[in-house]
Length: 344
Image (cartoon, rainbow, N blue to C red; front, side):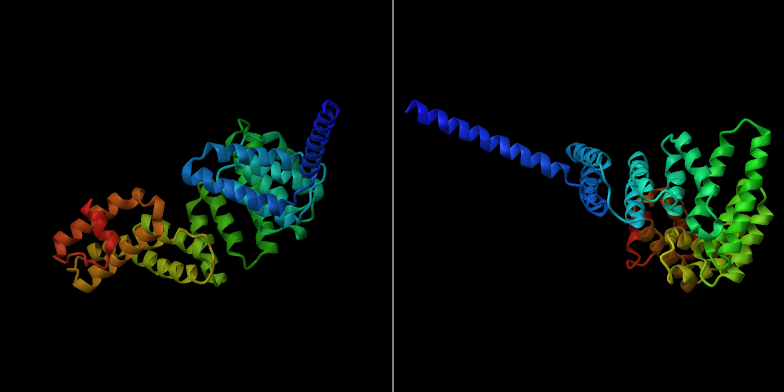
């Protein structure tokens, strides 16, 4: 009996050892980046919806396993998409680690290099950014994507903001201007090339040049909602309300034609403010139709703002209450979010 019992124990130990070996082998199986991305999104969902610390630990363990793999697999787009998803949740450090994995496979991929410049400046990766910046500049610009130009400009601005050298600042400013000129040359019908150039002039405190470039974008590019919104914003600040209103109409129209990532809530918010300002400037009484157009804009803005609504709610509440007092036109119940806003 003793011998039989001893044999049974030995077999059990062998089975456990075999299972542990199988687990080790399974752990060593390389996960493709697209699969890791899908798994990470699940953890990120728990983290940011429920502040789940266990899910955060699971995410970091998954990323440690992925980054430590002896061999990576996936396309350059797969690595780019994964990094973008992480960066959207402010996980810039993890995004950069993913990009480093991708750049081992695709060392001259412009999107991965420019992504690193974009995210690296948000997580103290200055030295690494410098290395990838130099590598990007060695790639012929005919092979650059729009991200190469746009994100490089952001990186150069980052350098300027941290420099104490007048000489370096002047050199980087000139480099930015050359980059946006090259951007236009290679992407003549891209809104992003105009928007990036306009932003450079804004940074350099050259407002007239910024306005000129934004106007050129509206003349030359058929769909340019971001430029239209910025153009309207500047005109509104300068008191050119009628021109601003026209630019807003263009922005609203263009935003419906493309996934532009434009702030549609702000477009409608600015539209309402323009209509109020025009009416005040003309000094004419506002009728019910005009008042309801403004209420409609505010209601749409509140809907589009979603989680960022609070930053604009007080202005909307104040403007709406003033209109009610001056026009006698109450807010219709169909403008539900506006009714909720003014109720406080």
